[in-house]
Amino acid sequence: MDQAKSQDMKMRRLWGRVRSWLSRPANVILLTFLIVLAALTLYPLLSMLMETFTIHVGREARAAKEAAGTLSLYHFQRLFATSENDYSWIQFYQPFLNTLIVSLSASVIAIMFGGTVAFLVTRTNLKYKKFVSAVFTFPYIMPSWTLALFWEAFFKNVNIGLKTSNGIMAAVFGVYMPEWFVYGAFPIALVLGLHYAPFAYILIGGILRNMDANLEEAATILRASRPRIIWRITLPMVKPAMLSTFLLVFASSMSAYSVPVFLGSPVRYYVLSTKMKSLMDSYPGQAYIIVAVMILFGVGILLLNQKVTNSRKQFTTVTGKSGQISKINLGKANRPVAILLVIILLLVAVVPLITFAMESIIVKAGDYSLSNMTLDFWIGTNLQERLDQGDSTGILLNPKVWNALGYSLGLAVTCAFVAGTCGILVGYGVAKRRGSRFSSWVNSLSFFPYLMPSLAFGAIYLAMSSKIPWLRGFLLLGLVGSVKYLPFASRSGVNAMLQLSGEIEEAAVITGVPWWKRMARIIVPIQKSSFLSGYLLPMVSCMRELSLFVLLVPTSNTILTTMLMQYSEKGWAQFGNAINLLIIIVVLLVNFIVNKLTGASIDKGVGG
Image 1: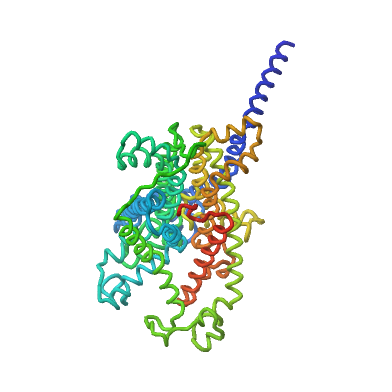
Image 2: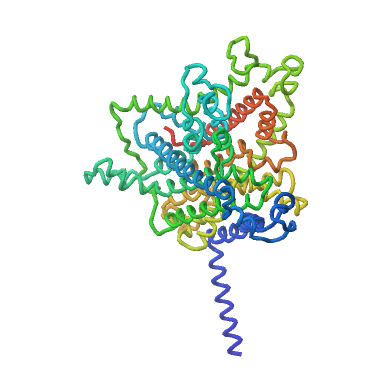
């Protein structure tokens, strides 16, 4: 009897502990996302790893002299240890070295450029802030490969690469740039760095904007110099955002495909992603090994980020105290710095848009006279008869374009809503349980999809969908997009939550305010601009995504980016440039509407 009573008491205590643990919203959130993310990330990863040991049908089976479906180490031996004709060096080691150079360089460029601009906008009296803040996000809104095409069209010449024509610099100004400047590591890293610099601007700028000015004021009272304040106070505060930016840019650059293709292939400069794509058609087992290597390096950076942000160090920058910011007076350097920054942004963000607009209205390439310009590619009819090019109507009169635009918008909004909402919840759970293994697991899983190259990620889910009959069409695209873009939202959510002092929510807890009301009335309003970036970044990414969806869409006319690719492959450059410009205009319009309705935008309201 006593033993039964003792057992009953133990069960009651255990159940009490479980109820107490589940009564904390952060624990419930983390448990839910641990299960869901494990199913949506670890299963695809395990499926991919199995492919590295599997002999595939076709050329791979013939080369390995084994039956398709057999488990073997052939791919590893072939890719890593084949000296014949320098196969391993050409197929892996050299592209691997090139990838490290490009990714590290792009990360440094993005953080230095984006972080510097964020500091100037938020912490100084820089002129033209609104213009800088609005225009700085343009390079990210535009697909990265359009910047690569612009760079190539501007600087290419007959003396280098496999191209036989001159670009604008050579044709108009007679300036022939050297090969290293036009193709290879330098332009790839520069274009990727500029493309991802808004990551640094958004993440670092949001932290700087919300910092408690009392920290700097106290240092000023103690007569600390401005450089010392920046080095000892400002930089440590933005360290989580800098590491998150580095993680995002490095992982993005490692898996980037389009930019290395356009700016590397003409001089046979290959990186892991381009080698992976070329091997996917003939030797998929080796291609998946390359994917695994790319993920492994991403995980290494992720662990570094975890070690810093999950430590017991405090990165609280938003408290219940004054948030007044003491801005640095640039003095006589203000106008020159502002003008230089405006010129750079015009060259990076505005000139490409003008180029795309011009290229969408000229009939014969290279001829920019008024007689060679027409709006028919936008609003014309019977183009095949009169111009012998492209579709029969301009893009604004083409029902296929409008259908693709509606599908793209619906998909982008769906992915943004799911990823953004989940990102806020993940951020809350991770911040509240920071330092625990539970928090680290969920934080790692929420970022893991970003470490997988988009092309391979889409291919894995395509294979999974063949085993799940109901996972088709819009549902498949929405699921893949939401999972793939969750890292954007989770990084934004975690950074925003780490800024908040615990005393803000504790006051509401003491008065008995329920969790959902604390989120809706206190936490979300305070960090509204940061949270909105968790919705807008996935939407922008989805609107201009190509690699992730190209294998999953039913037809090439399903979404705008695949339609753009189809037009480019057919040589209909005018239609391609017009659709590219249409994508950018739509995203800017959405950003403008959100800004007017909520007061926030894709730059998280950083600009003054």
